[in-house]
Image 1 (cartoon, helix red, strand yellow):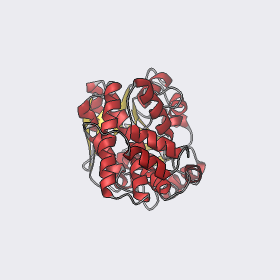
Image 2 (image 1 turned 90 degrees about the vertical axis):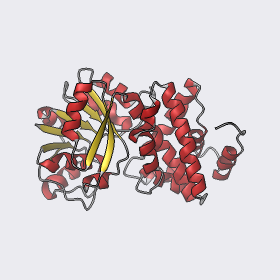
Image 3 (image 1 turned 90 degrees about the horizontal axis):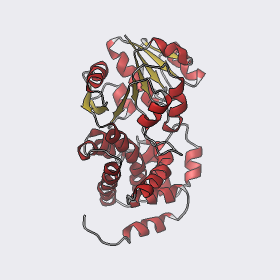
Image 4 (image 1 turned 180 degrees about the horizontal axis):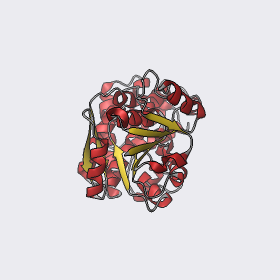
Amino acid sequence: MKAGVIGAGAWGTALAQLLASDGQQVALWALEPDVVDAINRAHENPLYLPNIPLSPSVQATGDMAELAACDLLLVVSPAQHLRSVVAQAPAGVPLVLCSKGIEAGTSLLMSEVAQQAQPDSPIAVLSGPTFAHEVAKGLPTAITLACEDKELGQRLAARIARSSFRPYLSDDVIGAEIGGAVKNVLAIACGVAEGAGLGLNARAALISRGFAEMTRFGLARGARAETLGGLSGLGDLVLTCSSTNSRNFSLGKGLGEGASAADLLANRRTVAEGAHTAPVLRDAARAAGVEMPVVEAVCALLADAAPLNQVIDALLARPLRPE
């Protein structure tokens, strides 16, 4: 058996290293030729996952056709590029989607996008509280593996599980995806609170009220509350709202310190998915009649539509209401 990983950023590289930890051959598709060369020559990815030695059984390639021999593909491309990337993947091979976001222009979740791009490929979703460097180092991690086909989900879980990497099975694909997408936007809000020096009380309030927004939106889209309260929802939310290791939290911290969103995003090589998801999520929530004031506030800051103090004051001045 040979697994494939599509996308050699930090998370894709970490997943390739995880799969190779038992000696399994792993094909890792990378867009950048210098990343392919570094992985195959020096067994490292200094551009996206520095200081992590990679197993020799991880072999990088820039040719998608080389993934045809794989019986499992983990897709870790940026959410807004997932459609075009999946369309190039070998047909009929199970796809485990590890990207978190909502497609701009369609408001489709990643599983819905993948089903359109590769209708003959079985789909599963991997989501949860995962910092790439910790997974690559073999530190204990638990995730949600969501798949509507229970038998396929069990087979995939057996392939992915390791002694330090524990998947919990679910058949709520929508819930797993919404948790992963919404938490990225909320992490920006918590980063803003950190950068602006608003204190830990404010961060706790944003996490809890943000989780209420996630739940309202998720239920409106057909998710189950228990999924949103699990690893792929609340668990991922707590992680990404608590550390500058989160790209979204780091982006928000810069906004809170007074930098413009345009400058912060222009200077990033890696993708802060929340910046792309925020306006799509806002529009989808409005269309569904779901109130998401924290998401609205993040969108205002990302668009430089209002000064930070005004955005904060507007949130605090909202009418009092039952919890």
